[in-house]
Image (tube, rainbow, N blue to C red; front, side, top):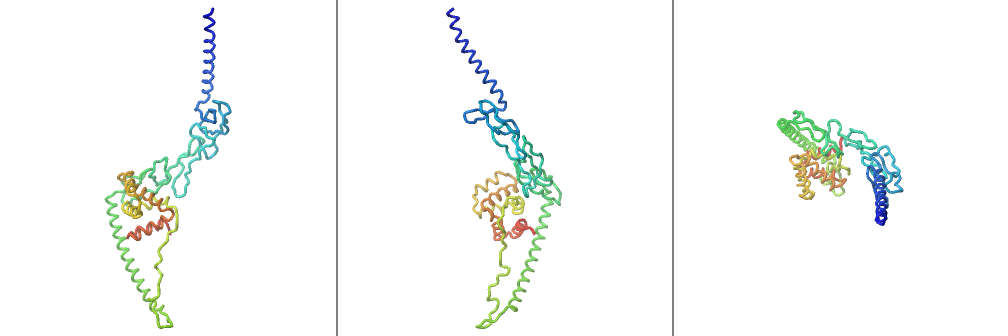
Length: 309
């Protein structure tokens, strides 16, 4: 009889413990997507496409979950009181278009417009550049993350002919320019002489500022122009500009190591670093550096990109 009495407390304790465990299991099974901490409580997470409008008031219970508003999404179970804003594909000059629309559970996906490509991975692309055209023929077509590859042999021959033609044109322009300058200077000496109280003073003694003013490119954000400008400048000249601007050699070498065997992407990355170091005045500084280092043709092309028309 005494042995039977001793067993009763043990049975009662076991029953109570079992009941508590079962109660906790039932409550936790309600939180199918897990829990989050709110003060001293553990609340059930709201499901995909929802956000927490009001937190729970009892342990292991749901608060008030609401669907994400238009233009926002939640792709994972959450304890946040807001949804994330959908990605925009309509940035100015980004050349992006919508591939897949945003829903309450899935973010919007963007892709490059036709005949454009991006040097970044597709999911992180923020700027697409126009694909190169190849009058000499295409070796590899332009795709989402790679520019067009042209037939190199013919391209080199065409480039050589283009360079020769440009040199001839520059020489002719220079000759004509000198002739016009000389003629105007002579006319100024003849027509703009004037009388001074102490005698005749020739215009040659007067400071002439015409034609001496340098072109000034206004302050602007160059981020959207970086791929196009990088294609004009090329790696060697970009490296020279970076060195003159005291960009550390470690950063320059990183650009080469990050983009092995791809001078175009090396140039884009280094130009991006340089533009960031120069701020809004980068356009004017780049133009002046190219001018003063004998790269006038490239300077004019950069000016044409930044100041079209």
